Length: 194
Image (cartoon, rainbow, N blue to C red; front, side, top):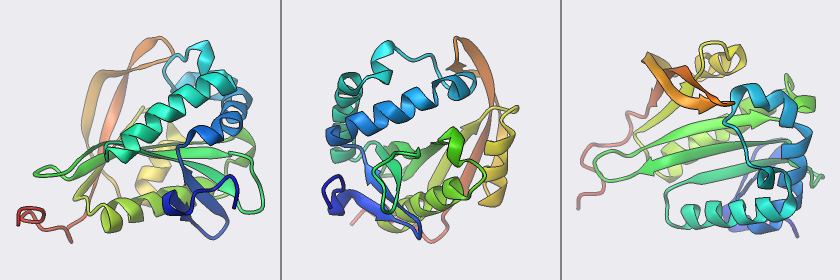
């Protein structure tokens, strides 16, 4: 499989979701550079290293370490038969014990939007969170003006819980975000306490 790592790869009908690993550095840097302009309005300001293979290698090493510690899971969308990264979906700030939750985030290449790739990837990561990690809750933060992400929340039945004022820095300014949650009632509150 070369680029892929079976034990850390999820698969959907059309793509692999490959977990963060330094070997993805060049493909991730290419994705970041291709989408720099279009994502500027919805992401934090990024250092120049975010757009280079060497910088991405450093960041991916940190992501990989976080994944191995069970704190953060970032997957890169790669269509079957390709080596091109066309997006990413992450499950971060993962807590177990009495919380059993994580926060989902996602982004898709400008040339692959409105093709269902985000839906496919988010669905698979929700499945991973609820059925593999056995989380009780997935949270998400979405800017009120981000209509595409609001549509993803609606599609998967996330419930809007409120508005967090000036909660995240986006492109150099503090932005309000709606808080969403998806609950997994199949997870017992007593789980993990044997």
